[in-house]
Image (tube, rainbow, N blue to C red; front, side):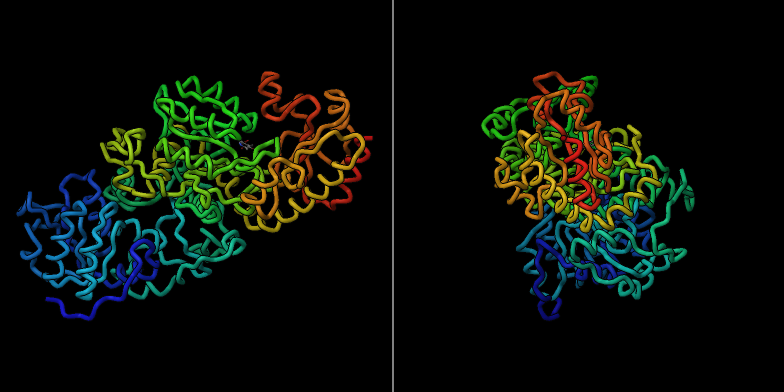
Length: 610
Ligand SMILES: *Cc1c(COP(=O)(O)O)cnc(C)c1O
């Protein structure tokens, strides 16, 4: 019997990274109870990975004693092991974990680890009372790679901020070198601006380069045939081919995940391809999403027309009316709710919490396009969103010079709660029957994004664009502050202008969305808004064409101020009715206020209007 003093209490809902890191550094020998001989089972994945990191792993499986798994003799029980192991890693259900925990205490193990999805608080109490340390509902493979700098290729949020070169490679893993654990600084809940500059981007491990290099390569060498096989089977994390991942892009992915407070990000070639890749794991032919009528015009066309070719459907509803949303969402085959936190171009703000309530009732994720707000102004995950989409083309890159998209996963949606999402909750034929959610837990959706979405659809972000967008994110806070400040002054000016019939800016107290703006975007209602020019279509066209400083183009979120007449450009493909409901009628002019001297922006609009 173990007679150590009780282990210090730890919060099993939120382990400090230092707790897990110390365990992984202390442990040398592991008994894996429930180790499977089948290579596509999560236990087999984890065992192979831990072996590669230098741990001695003993498989324990009463079903196949005397056989071997990954070169190790299988034991029927902990009692039969040839030595006392440091840790017992339990791949059984929560109930069975109780008895095995007791056996682990008896055995003299120092750590009991319960796999992803496995939790037994009573057993944990018993083990802790005997001085053992306990981890529940975590995968050691995922934790190891997260805390020792290996997750880069997936764009996962490691929560590690460090200005030191991070240890990489075999020689510096904790099992081989306990010093490795002290070398990368403790993770922090750093402030927004700090994360905007540092998250995901440690100095380059080989050269020490402080700015993230552009990895302009298509492919990556394998260590050997076995390494290649492990990579292709998703048993180990790493780069294979540029369509799936790139080290520059993964820095951006981790950065965006950190800024949104999410678990992981998949970057794509554009905002539109982000929408495509985001829906791939959710949709089967015949399924549909419920989306706001006030989406960006391009999204209305993509969802309403082009996705029909995949037999994916979309019902557009007024998301200001929750009764309408609830009714639409209860229809069969609905797989997601989709809205923009701040809608382009109407200055409309979505009640994210009200939508979340409905999405939870129906058991589908709430997807929020946060392009116009950016995580600086609005963090949809804090209000219950499950997935966040960005066109990084806009404010995140911020300089009007790089296309891109991002899909951020909160990591909190339970893909097993119903059978609506077989791509994540059932064996995947394209990966020899591995089940994404079972194997990758809260990393499943992001892993799918790379290893199926990007692999099979192919809209990969270019490394150069990732680099430019990384540069953009570094000043996101500063830029958004000034964008909002300038936008408010321009909106106030227009509001008092004799040629202007209305201004739709949620930052103005008269806006019907002002209340929601204060709740969801307390730092400001963005810098894109619309106003109505007296004189309709003709006057709109004239105003746009008379600007000298503001650029007439179809973009938003540039350092430059931009002006557009949606009825004659971006929303041209829509019907009159769709145009009206999207807030793009004949007299509407859209502005994206940039970072120039605000008096110059106002003067240019003043001369254009007169
Ligand atoms: C621009 C935009 C998109 C599409 O992004 P691209 O990068 O142009 O493909 C989607 N949603 C919103 C809100 C946008 O502004």
